[in-house]
Length: 141
Image (cartoon, rainbow, N blue to C red; front, side, top):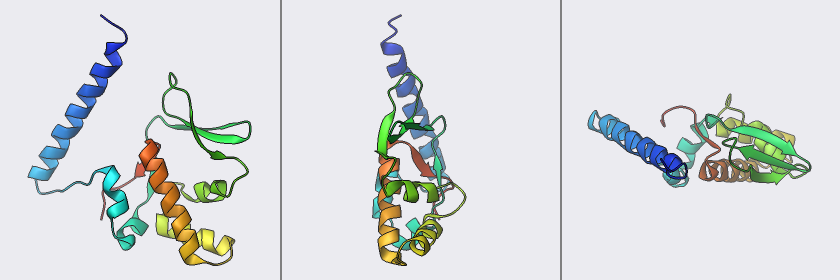
């Protein structure tokens, strides 16, 4: 058996099972949204999302950067510089509070500009979702 093909087969099986589960859920009347469609959600809905790290993801500080390691056999993904403003935003996306609550807290900590804080939280969350580092903790409202 070719060791190179094994992960591809496993990934294909995971995708097939995920699609089958989604189809079953949708047939039962529970619609699902693809993660890449999150950015199209109304702001009110997006603000209610409580983010969480994807299973198996580990956040590591490597020198002056913050990275995410999804699997031990893959190189870590660069998220941002450790001294950047993104660290403050990332620390609010903690899996305990919603994105809206994180933005409110960030706005209090910064200049009080609610819209600027919301834009930072939203942008970082969607970026982390795109990288496969985090996703909504609960089914979407």
